[in-house]
Length: 199
Length: 199
Image (cartoon, rainbow over all chains, first blue to last red; front, top):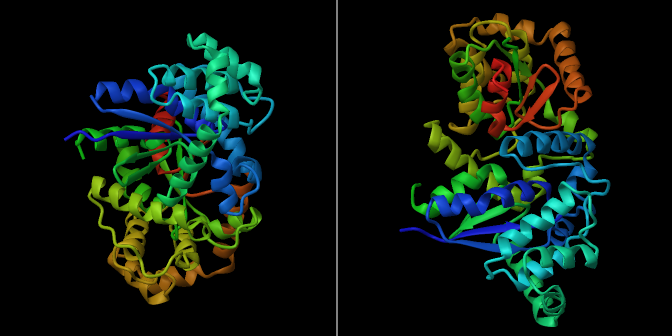
């Protein structure tokens, strides 16, 4: 029996970009239901005692990650340019994604924000950039932003991040299939297979 | 033109076990020359300010890793049992591996030590365990251990660990193909392909 694939992502996360490019097609090909779960890595890292991205805290790991991103993006044909600032603030984009997570445009919006961050070197923390991306997806940016900044959505995103921590999630991207956690874009295909009931 | 595949591994590293199980067969199938490069993660982690394995320092990451190991080992048919102590001290085994790294028995010895650690819950830091594994590979344990504990081998392993750090290596397992670094068992097939000239 097919199960739902939960895709947990953070807009500041490089490897989440690669997964976001592939996850919708992969789920569709396997006939698996996909749900998008934006959350914030900041509180997760803070609870681990980390005050910055591990890719900044550990320079060798960071240098490798940027090279790895070039290879991964080249392989899937996704554009990539190392941004001039990292990590960028994904809070507003995450609130927007939370507010439209069940809308058909969620995938297109997420990919558009990721490309702004990791292919076009735009500051996704800026309201104008997020608004532009909403319009590009055919959404009413003003209306969506108004709802995204409501207390209800702010609380929903906060609860989601707490849910992530309570379920053992510690990085992004991550996937849940029921209680089974899969961490990292390298586990996307395994997670899809688990959701499809193949494993 | 095929290039040499360098397999950098640490005996305390769980994911290095999974890679060690596969790397010799994968290299042979691709007609790629493989060299084994034992090194020590301790000094690498210490230089990052880490005083223990990240899997111990970050409990959620550790819990996930043990579950992930069960899945990975089941997939490749390798035995796995969570050891009662982690990480175990791989120094003596690494010195032995350094001393026989060009011998035909290096793969069998490495896999045997990994299975002792991650399938049989033996203390690979104990001289008797390492000696037993050497004998199981048809080697003269007393003679190999004597050489492994010589100043020459101690210095060679220390130099290797310094080489690892200077080349940007920050975790295990890692692979080098020329200057190109691949981190993690998930990159084994990519590294083999790069060595074969396929990418």
